[in-house]
Image (cartoon, rainbow, N blue to C red; front, side, top):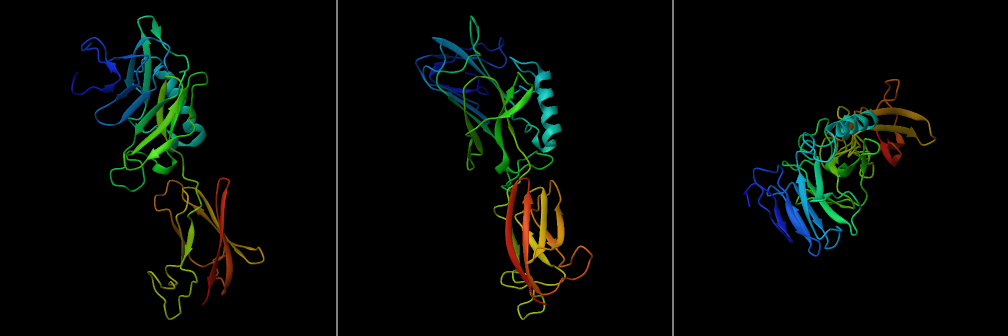
Length: 294
């Protein structure tokens, strides 16, 4: 087997070097079929009997964005254009993640659903562990990444359900029922569940005034809203429901936090009191309280 080609189990590798590119791997119906790449960037596993052919070849094409085997490059390009138009550029397939699975024998390709679901795993890179997919621009958080499939009937990407993530291995796996073209896509992070405000209470003239753990803040630093989504807004209200200030979260920000200068929308310093804050992103909302003591 060529050292730079896939690793397989459950079948016999047929050496066709110089004739097929990417190489083909021959498997038997009665055996589990497993194919992976030595760099660990793509894996496919099919249960025994999942393909209704006695013997068949599997191709795992990692250059599908440029030279797909079973689709036209224009189909992928149109799907990319549509999702960028509808969701924004952060939803484009991650560079190098577009992978094609192709199954065939001497009689032709196999495009019918499997009798049993297989498992497809695609790798992503986050070498510095910052929770952002390497190479994504605008930045895409790992937690928003999923495996999507090319819907050839509509020339669009369709999100596959039931994906699971192995963060130590940096793999996203998903059951799949038909061969095709797959990719890792992300979205803007709209999660608000971990958002919070600090310091609370805010008391910049108290005995513990300052910045840091256990400190009650400073006028210059104001109140920080942390663990924010990548888009949305922060709203501050009085207890009787009057809007004090609305802060727009900058899209594509990686800091996931922003400061409130303790001023209302007119630029006036707010009075000592208890206030309600809301973080809103899409349909997600989180509410909390904060106290200001001058």
